[in-house]
Length: 179
Image 1 (tube, rainbow, N blue to C red):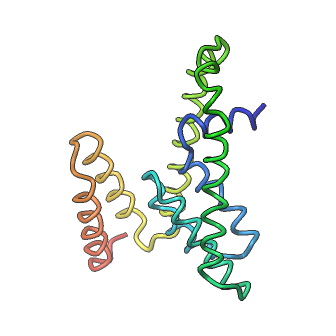
Image 2: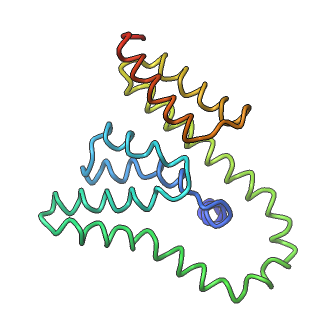
């Protein structure tokens, strides 16, 4: 049942951040990346799309470690992540109109939405805790992250400007040797 809920959640929301945070144990057992490199690589996953770039990056790292062509490793990993979703989409497309009219789907949709929101929230907390643990100035990092969230969420600030301001504040916190 949990697998069905997870699949429906990923179909409903995309699930990039959830899958990214869930990749940590898998990547760790492959010994492809260190914990620090993986945590830093997963931070952009809050935005849609970069999971495919991360898959290509991870494929290139694994290919390098295996002595295989880097571009081939990146391509295989990118298609490995991209292909199942496209295949599922095209396989379900002819049945989608009929599926949406099913009463059981309409009743389950609020629960699916709640489950996907919970998974995304859990992955945000997991990545935040990783950053807090890995940072050389964790309290300042937490404050910068919270300020960036409030700037975007409450004040509708332009995301690019918030990222640049966060980088500048990070450099300032590092230069001031804040805790």
